[in-house]
Image 1: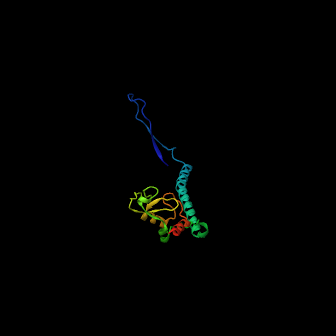
Image 2: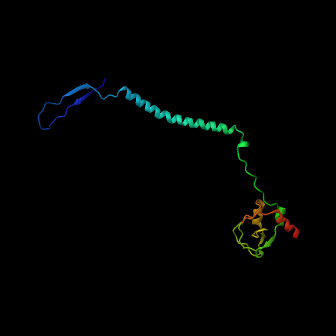
Image 3: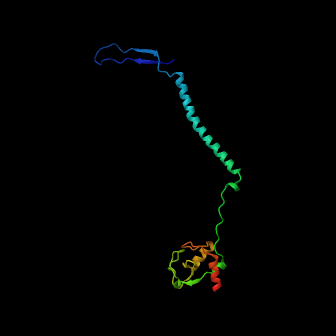
Length: 166
């Protein structure tokens, strides 16, 4: 049992009074058992709930990981279409070659963004008649089968038309 000393303060500082008395009695302010249990329960819940939540997230993650590694991946994943390949070297040779001064539309190369000089070799794309540096457009057309400026598709019948005229 705990004892607390109670002190009675003097009523007036100037009056003569007997010395203060000290009495000892058991304390009535000690916490009871139910308060201790509720505090202990709160501490346990504060520690347990975040741990349980993180465990649940981890278990869901492991289950999803197992599911996606053990399912047939060929049927569930979308298949990207094969990219269209550019022109071959023989098809590039069939395209018309001109000089910079013979270009019909503009003297700026849209591939390298440089000006095409009057004596530089250039290539004119059939159909849209856009002109580019020979090396720039050949590199582009070897990877793509459309005009780098207007995105017009180069049809095989346009390439065959240049073969028949030569």
